[in-house]
Length: 118
Image 1 (spheres, one colour):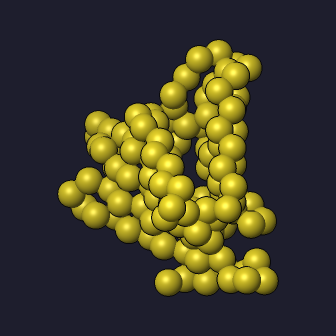
Image 2 (cartoon, helix red, strand yellow):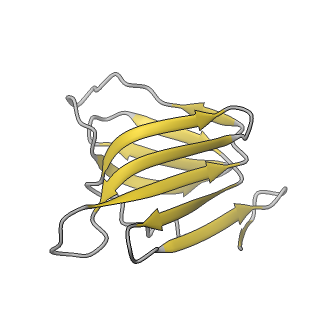
């Protein structure tokens, strides 16, 4: 399992998604449960080297801004919402910054699709 798969995103609530076209970057501002038994804290999940971004908002399971699960896939990342929608981000890597504790993790995809820690 990659570090992306280990991020505390389950039940996190997406507040805002920002796409910077010229920087090939996506920032997702969310509230995430960084520690068990504590309230959700503001966090930022950023993707860099973005080549494709899909964000359907059809809500096949009902309306929700909460995350069900997230996983690294070939060439990028998927974030499945509790609404049933799946965000697809084809990107070189990601950064995750949690409130106060500055929980940080970075991964970068190499040109052949392998992942290396940075």
